[in-house]
Length: 123
Image 1 (cartoon, one colour):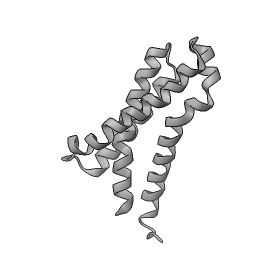
Image 2 (cartoon, rainbow, N blue to C red):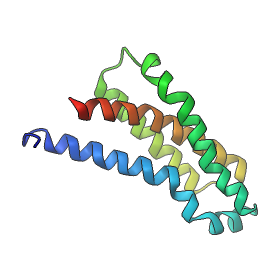
Image 3 (spheres, rainbow, N blue to C red):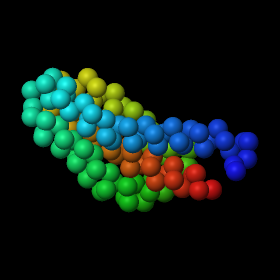
Image 4 (tube, rainbow, N blue to C red):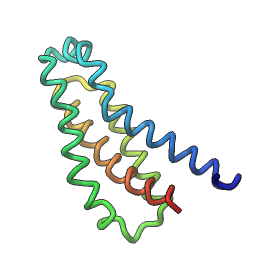
């Protein structure tokens, strides 16, 4: 059981991870409405999950190397910030290309936050 002082930090990390998971897969549940709104086929909307996953796969191993001199709190805040901005911009995306770019931005944030949160939660 974590100490009382660690509980708020662990809850924050859990909320961040919940947000990461939700943002990464939310397009699946919204496939029809997104496709209708942006005038694209549902399969094209499904590709947005792949775009997110591939971006995450490339940036998750490289982010710790690039950000190794930053303190953990800054890394986590930048990661969750990029994830949030990507999701917010994606919500108002005027076209499919812009939405794809927001998915890349959100995935980059997830790639920074996810490994950092795992490391911080393990301490």
